[in-house]
Length: 361
Image (cartoon, rainbow, N blue to C red):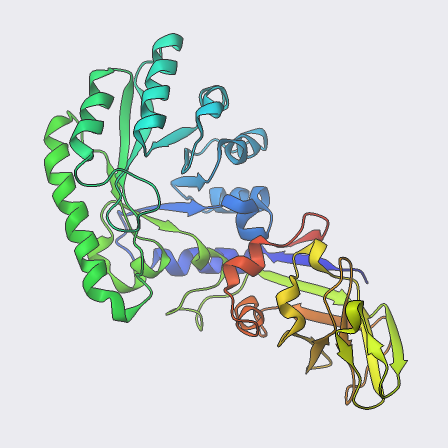
């Protein structure tokens, strides 16, 4: 066996239906499939969700939207952080850009004038407190006026993003964000002749703040099986498996790996696993990281190499060729991440394209 990432589309379907059950039947769903479907397989995930009736997809950059269009996806696609150099990609592939800054807005208006665009669908991003991208409260009216005066666009949606909807200690701040968004909407809706889609909720927002539901919810990490509140009822979609390529016997006092980062305190059986930092397993796993072999946690030892990690097999019944679980639906990517103080997002999206993806449906 070689290293392989299994993507379970049955679990994806379960998670999608679970999240849908938490919102009103009339509420639309937007699936976030950026970063190759959170490190899985963006096309396979999008096709499955398309079958299930998702209303919208969102990606970070235009190139990701182009990939979906080339795979035959016809569902509307919001590009969350479009760049000024991607206008041709956006319009040629019928992608819908987020309008989030004066620079992007002005350059897109100039492009729209040059190409004589009419009623091109756009999404207006309000910065209600995350302070990442979007127009702040005192910029909204000016930006909206510029946009409408151009007579080139159709406002498909107005949206914002919650900063800490998973953190009960930040409830006051989250409610303040929702109120700020509502106030901004009240000011700009009268300027439109139609009612755009309003959306603010991420996965944690769906669970913890029904008042942020509005017309559509955005499902990101929850689709892939993780949520601070629902992790026990969602099903992880990713399963990363590898194998023991070689077992080496190391005597007390011998070192393992680059820079002699690990020195054996006793006779040690060392397993070599074909997975390294080129595959997305960072050197942070030098301390505290582990894999599962024969239902036992085996600690990563020495420095993570480009193509392999080394693990301590003492006390484990293991042979060359045995399966290694990096993470699965029981020992999850979230558990794996916590072992070195990071989050599942980082683990999943760091997974290299050289790891074979295997679709389980």
